[in-house]
Length: 302
Image 1 (tube, rainbow, N blue to C red):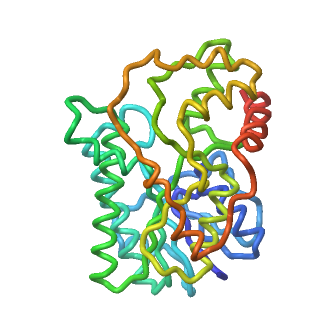
Image 2: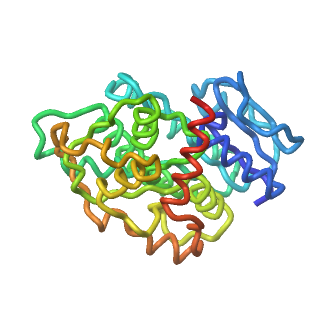
């Protein structure tokens, strides 16, 4: 891989991937709404483009000429907060993904890679629920995006990889996900509370996730969809107590204080057979090792 495009390039995943690509001497066109402040490395290999993604034609006109090997799409509005449950906002995200695939095809980029989420699997629980949360809307929107892009890629003849990301943690993560919430509460002197936490879950460090994402752009891929996981899922409560143990206060992890949200996961959803067959082993650290690094970072960046 010599040249790549990344949307959402100034975010947690995007900026970490930019650093990985630069370390591997890959030229990057970094696209985001703003780079103020910038989380990207200062390098002559990085070109920044601040823009809204409104149409394929507009985007193509703004992309510097050249042969690109990979187009990574991470831009997604409404990952956190009330917008996460807004169907109109989520539909616009689906449209943006289709626009980017269209642009990828127009510039003859070899491979289009789009970020999904394990939360997509929540749609399987939808028929059994009478009430849902913002996380369900987000998961359903990602699932719809996957289906639309897979169909569209086959329609226009564009090589496509859907990357279903797991729960990602690590230094630099300010997304407010379950690990961020847990550490934030503990460091603030409060007790984080959860539902029963009796179902399987999976967490992967950002460094290992980025390694897999990089290789999916670099390597020959034999499938359209890949789950990027640790290969060692556990019960959610086991992960949470591991966080508490790292903080020397496992007794402050309050399991069962909240009602069950009704979303069910199974161990089969966390299968990494396909991805390891195509890109090899990419996990370098255990959850306990990664959490120690994350705790130290969060203590220094409260």
